[in-house]
Amino acid sequence: MNQIVLRSPYLIFLGSETNPTYAKTGAGVAHWRPEDCLGQFHLPGGSVDLGLPEMTIEQAAEAGAKSLLIGTAVVGGAISDSWLDALEAALRSGMDVVAGVHTRLSDIPRLAQASKETGSKLIDVRVPPKGLPVGNGKRRSGKRVLTVGTDCALGKKYTALALTDELREQGAKATFRASGQTGIIISGAGIPIDAVVSDFVSGAAEVLSPENEADHWDVIEGQGSLHHPGYAAVSVGLLLGSQPDAFVVCHEAGRKTIEGWPDYELPSIGEVIERAIELGRRTNPAIRPVGISVNTSTLSEEQARNYLDALEQEYDLPATDPIRFGIRAIAQKLVSEF
Image 1: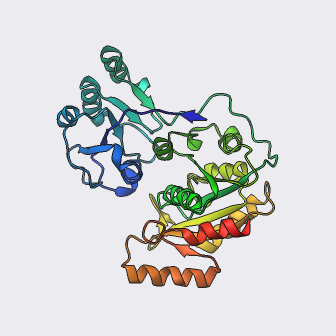
Image 2: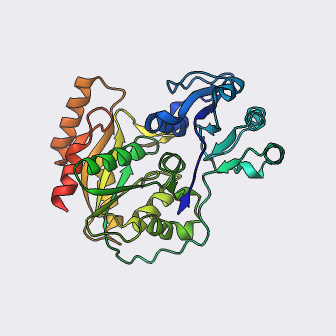
Image 3: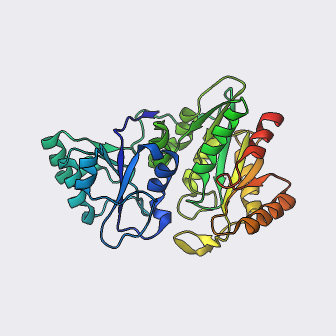
């Protein structure tokens, strides 16, 4: 499993991004590690706001920023040529540059040269460890819960982090297992599952969540969606390798189509439950859903509560927005029923 140590505080780089969906790395770090975030920096045209002070690279360096953290990740995970002036300026101001995209900073000659000349580091988070095995499907000790989604970028990581905290509050042993770049940055360890060669995805999930004490919960961050036209392969491999005893379905109220794939309708929560059980039974015949986690940010509080109440009645599962209302009911179900 990858272990990373980053120098804080961070200046979050948001480029020219206007869609919050593609700034989820920056948003996640700002939400879960606000004490490590000094400010945010945009290129012309950028409008995503993380609620951090707006700073130039020079101002952030003077204020003590130690790392420029790339907070955006577009489809395909590339680094735009339009970013390079800013990234090089950060290196030459004494900051490390941290990225969780598929393009490796160290493969860009201009940045590699600036890093060599200044001693500032290029830190690529989305690099899987070497020597990952093919999944063996063998049962292992410990308990596991996986977050699965109707789509990407709607709360699987937030749900897993909130659930880990709540399980600990209730006296359970629990560890958050990061499977994506943002989760790794937040927790300091994990495996970027979507950067693993496909033959080894299930094996990577087994490594991510190894044998543990019988009463210990691994809370595994989900990736993609089992119904996603582009990313389902990652989601299936993670599900099979995780061998979860339980799963939480994650959804965003009001989303109708796959983000970035407007020709594909979003699957229903019921369809996600059905497919997760069908596939997950291959490596854990006892797999079952324990709750529904919904991003209700587009709804008023009254609308959100009515929406969640309706889901509870339809699926006979606790339903909540973990950021707005907490996730106690789902954690209690795990503690009491497993």
